[in-house]
Length: 118
Image (cartoon, rainbow, N blue to C red):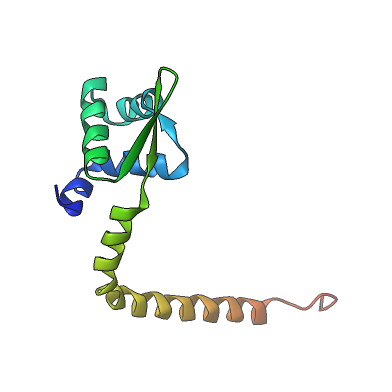
């Protein structure tokens, strides 16, 4: 499955968000996803399997638990692909930063100096 097909599903994106914070057991992931999306444990397991098979997640056994973690390789590939488009929003972000700085400067100039109770 292509990286973007994997990421097209909101459940899989949410699972990756959870795993990006910390390694989690399948039970922990299932509890959050079931609460947020109202899907079955079996459906969550299928999503975990897709992520694992596509290389987005790794799994290791710790006793009877399966611990999942995010893998950076496929995400790096997506980032590299997006890099050719980054210029589209980087100019807008730079302009936003300039405007935010301008607003901060104006607010500072508008504030009275300490002791200028006038």
